[in-house]
Image (cartoon, rainbow, N blue to C red; front, side):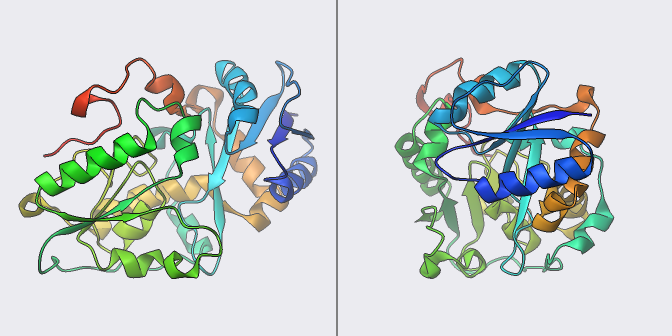
Length: 296
């Protein structure tokens, strides 16, 4: 039996915490819920729906003990069904530790792969910005504005026109349909946004400048337009199959299926990417700073 502590903050994640606790009890695990501060004992697993300043101390303590479970918005979310994803000891799952589960893709309302011919006209890039808080709370070596400025300069030097997409609010209907925006551009670029999964599934090259579960299909090095390789189903199928292993629906959270997936990963394989620890050794020094994309 495992002992979980679900950490909420400012009422965010209360519904998810309740569903997680219900599913954990169905599987005969112990689970309690705390808000913001508090303490997590050494034999307990901390569960975090995002990391903010109020919860970061607890997250890092659990991370140091390899007992941090991170929950975030899923790679395979669609307008029809929202999913979540989990990662052991990181904000991104290390895809090499996840067994591929091709059959799980069929459990989601995920569209079939759409082939896309090479885009015509002037090459353009959709620069997808994550929230300023993401840069702050992950302790990256560069700020929101530094990354934005660097990427605009780099993409223009490669021959792309650039459109910046800020992270929309939940009720912002003008920017809610990301697919319509993606189809107007040649490539998509982000730190490691779930938008990348939408892009490659629709045949649009995507680049993630930080490691992510999708890294094998969304490389860090941004290619010049003449060198672009459009994603094929053969390339993205195994990547999405691994992503599907860590994605789960709300129903799977409540009925304990998600708990089973989490606990099935052996402790030696519970490795993820957490950028405050991976990237805090150097400060921003020109284009060579970690997490800033380079050209290829």
